[in-house]
Length: 605
Image (cartoon, rainbow, N blue to C red; front, side):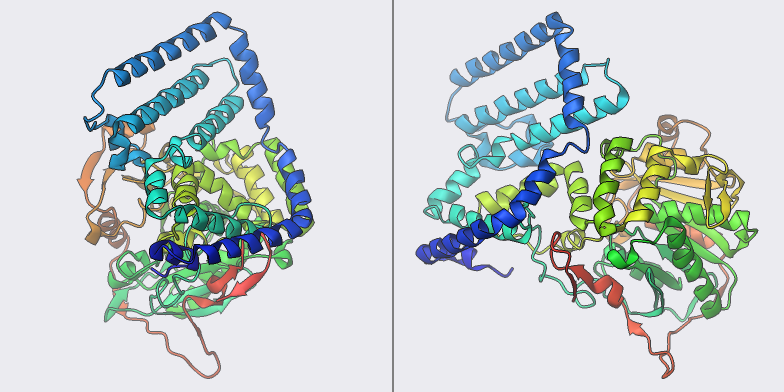
């Protein structure tokens, strides 16, 4: 791992004076520019787009409406704290303890937390955290939307107050401070100033060195060519690795809120490479990272210029009139719309089968993301998007990071600022930091019609590109893979969406979350999955009656997709020619990065 100058100063326990000088100069530079950026930041922070103040005002009113219940809860809390204090005072300081929380809470995995003093700090915090969240959860008189908000933001507060996040209470930080003569804190301050500068007054936490990986060299390395492009996407076709291939090609439709190469990080965990090795002719859509030039693009445009355009190209290149589809997350939502559109236009045979990766189609239970998507929040979001024509990538990234704040926010606060370390090079975090924007019109349509009004589940509830969408008429064979711990597309919601189709559906539930549950190659032999073709029951009943299998769902999918047509043809090799020179994968659209989440400058790698 490449080390920055601050980290080198700690390792060498020298040059701290030079580090002080660097910090001093950065502080002056930030102070001089704060007025420009600070006013804007302050105005943004004063708004309450998500109605947090209103939600917690309602919570306070409900708590005070039952003073006896509140008093009993408070009394019980202090009794528990007193019992903890008495046990701690009477315990032997030399005994190293092994708390149960060690099994489930990675924040306290260091053995230093097992020592007498910090064992008390940890358990006092956990008791307080449990009390606060229980108090909020026990209020059953709040409306569903308000209750979801207070629970979510109470957890945000509880996570932020963890003793791991404070230098004086974190034993690992204290040890590092002693060992480095305070060098870790100086290095952390230097990292903090860098992130504030990058964020122009807002904290843009660096999760990974942006130069740690290079697209096409370290990640997104599968051999392929861009065979078509328009304003919204490039279509990549991959070179075959087998002498013969399945006759029906495979088109992957990824979400446009991320780059496609989550499915092609490294050869070992690349779904794209694995599918090619299984004999598929693989195409993937690589969406553009939009800017003001794309402000007018609508959801209709994403359908027409995305998968519909891709199908036209695939039909010509493969000399076939049908394709297998894979839609991931938002790409799965668009894929469902595509199926409805094709059915309405009497072109349903253009799709042979469809696979949905953790895809929301029924948005009745949106999970924690519902906290950010309500009429008031969308109104405020539309006002912010109106001035630029797009949603800043940093706003989308911040929302998703909050869903897993301990892993995606506070762990980096501890590592980067308190321990003064540089982020480790990690391909998944490199992809996660490769932020993308959202065109204003398209994003507003998606949020209002899917999340708020849930129109896709209604027969003919939507009219897209001149055609009404009715999923109940779609009889295309479908395979749903969802993840049990998914916090972005909760599996019970994806299960409800799977039941909207009129054809045969195989629903499979994998282990882990939104990313790890999908990027799970058989060679890793991780997790497990449940399968049950009977979808007439509710989600929990389905799971109780499902069969459990060890290992990756990829193998199960391979058997299923082969059953949809196993005829083979000679491998379709891509050949360059002078009149149509193809660009190598991953293509220029994927390589287009935001120089920083806030500055609005585009940088091509």
